[in-house]
Image (tube, rainbow, N blue to C red; front, top):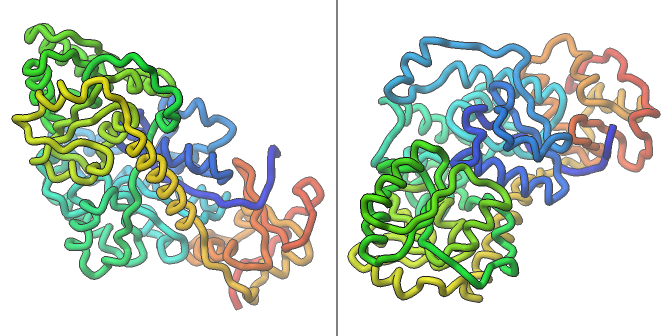
Length: 456
């Protein structure tokens, strides 16, 4: 046992394949950083063992990775996904099994899902009825935004939207623009379409005192793919005569950028799969940035570069307006001239204040979502009688004493932290309950006796 204290516990569902330094994985990283900085405990509830890519290494012994004891495999799914992504029922089932395992060990104040399959697992056993469930609308289709480059096979977006439309599922829209589409698509749950902007993935970018005086290159963050519109980026560099700096996730994208830079005689630097302090330093060294992507919900690249240099987005792209408070929206034929004018100017004091306040507001919103209403009456329940006798109850031991772990038992355990008389104590891997005012610690407690958990 390491530390044990009264705090909040958050569960976040992230697929193993998505836990990388981009997209959903980058979003998940920012949530982990926020939760740990606030003193909360957070568990990653996943479908399979963690990837050996280094991302999780920094969270060892602070964050649990909870996965099913036995994972289901489906070769047919892999065959179907050769062309476009179907709804992955196997992924959903593995998420469900990991979630049940997590609920045997802990109770949660907030559960964050990432992707339709994880939301399917959560709602399928009814957890959203008793615990705050926040579902970020990562994909445009979930928020009702027109999808220009869709990776899903027909019918998947319908399934995702059906899950999002369920009552008691809170949708985290990344901006007012995304929210406006979501409320139109889910008109019967407009009050559950919340604006919860994405946090900055590299928190070091919020330290404006580390910005260097010397800056070089026009930045672009992302892979070489039609959605990101790299051809427009290359065209702007050629027209302005300025050098380019790209941060790409793979060698495949790096080779494509290198070929084009050399073909157009553009001076350049290419950085592959950079993270952490290295990525922060590169972004802070940029003299300007340009993100002409045709479609974005997050716009994480634009958000990141806005912390270090003047950042240009295209007026013709609707998603750009979500970032208009700290980026420049420009007509495409004027990008080269604007780049030449803003190159090397740095971040204005006004923009720094906007970005700092933005970060503070998002964290406050997340903290509010993790605060559950509390009951001032203790339910008539054998659990509380057991708590009076034992003084301290370990969540995992108590659930192991149950004859079954059906959905009724899940609901009852989810209700526990909302009772005023009970203190919920967390370490990074264990959850205990004790009566308020007690000073009992785990090593002083008895094992809970074999009592049935039931409301009378």
